[in-house]
Length: 277
Image (cartoon, rainbow, N blue to C red):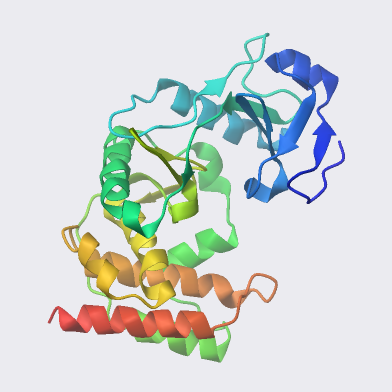
């Protein structure tokens, strides 16, 4: 099918896919949808993952069809009429009400994210993620381990500022959502916040919230907001690693946004960590 970038554009879904999921073939591109391939047909959201993503699509669907919501919401997947989770590279789920979370929602967001990770405890990392090696995976490995010296010297120097503050941490790892910026959390009072676009990683759940803290705090130049996360175990160390991971994705020119914002974020993290003594 032809996908345009205009959010208001309406395009036709493959009739076979529409019939399989029992939806109208007329679909609307969701603003901000993942990779411009997420659409809505009335109360159903359809996402094109590609047929090569069969394992990922089925794993996500099985997880969210079984997870018990307790203080959070998730998008429940929809099976096709033949019982399959994916049809010609498409998956479907129920539409979630809500707007993207904002700073004033942080207290409820933190609670919901904590409950969400309690529900994920004991679930293994999916096999397909063990085989992937994206720029995010590489940056994540460096954030927790040895940073490759062959990266850009300026980037390596910035990373070294944070890496020098790392200390060993003894927190149990588990399945987490590794990309929890506020755009991946929907708020619709009086319902609990909804967690969307799960990015599976194997790290301490405190790290998942440190990623959120990074985006709302250091990256925006706000140190005060970090006080809302100080109750988390080893939060300073998790924040250091979150900052390193975001910074180290900038190795690739096509992905880089410029280092100045990350340099300022580094300064906030260092100021916060050193203030704790």
